[in-house]
Length: 114
Length: 116
Image (cartoon, rainbow over all chains, first blue to last red; front, side):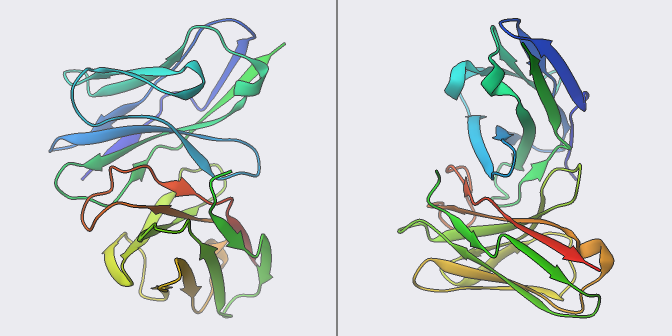
């Protein structure tokens, strides 16, 4: 079975400060990893995904994430946040070779303080 | 703007009733997935349809059923509604082929269902 743990339910950060949103997963097989963002009253939007290759993945809006297989982590980072980054962020996994079921974490609410 | 639309935006039903939620995907997206997102939780996978056939199902009872149509629209039907069915229901479409969903999923804004 798979599970995704987002260790922080709420993260307040001042504007232009760096931020890291943590995600750990457990799986008996290799996985693909994703980060999604959900703005108020909207659906989810893909930020970035790791399928293979370089463990450092760059996404939209200046976000990046690093896959660490030994620590089973896929933390999301941004060096300088903006007010517009205030949203809910979800980490998700899919098992490799078992195609189509996403497992989402419970989400991290990022609030950027002016 | 993902090009995925859902209707209605909000819906109120009473326990025991049946509900149909609708999703219109982007043209050419032959895969659609449905998710249930309870308040304060991440989305939970209900099922996926690929070329009008169910292609995987999460841990949801049979009273949750779906249909996918050739015009890239789809439906989620829930029978015998329970209070715990109150949630945001999201659909997501992609061009992924059967069994592989690493292609980007495009989510609709969701339908907020309240069961009283």
